[in-house]
Image (cartoon, rainbow, N blue to C red):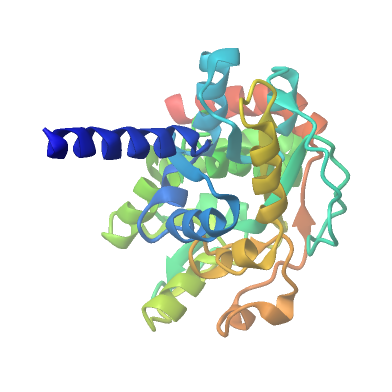
Length: 328
């Protein structure tokens, strides 16, 4: 009987302790929470400081995050959404589901200024087509790519932030002539994947000559695999910039903890993980803190970027053009 009482007492103590540990729920994209992604390291680092249980949930690719938050609305279990970008910020804010972050933003290492009161950046990069360095006649522009026989894998702009970024890239570079570019590219597209990971895997498996990714993607092969056989093609039109952001949900039941995480996101323990796990440039870490190998990456001569409102206004027409071109 004494053992039964003691066992019951320990169970009650354990249950009470578990119940008192606050849970911070963060929705993000799948590659962020992969074993090789930044999620596991960041979870461990934040839990050392917060006396909490940080739980990441993968929700497909970046653009799918917003769709899920819209679907769940005010009943979402998420406290923080991490993995939207500047092309989705306006649409996300229009849902009314996000709250001001209320954080004094430290000095950032972004190629653009940042004053947004709702979303905070955590990393950035330039979109680019990645190829094997034994490829001959590497296209140096969208027009050269469209005129070539190069097989490309891209991502669906309705579910993927890189896919949406490509639409913005073509629109920013060509404006009213974007439809002609997409008509030319249509027969280069091998397939369109829901997200980045599937597209990159297909490229690595030899299913395509080039994949839409980032100028920083070759750093993974160089640093993690000691393989210098991948490079990013430099396009003369310039390269579209992606800034990835996170935001606090207004109906979070852990708003203080969520703000603590957003502030932590811009500190070195988080930022130092980004270059060799998410393979992007960190938003608040000077370039001289980047690991060896990043200095070899292609740097675009010209950066392209729509502000969030312009990106939102451009999206519908750009999507129609893309769908029309690829359906023919």
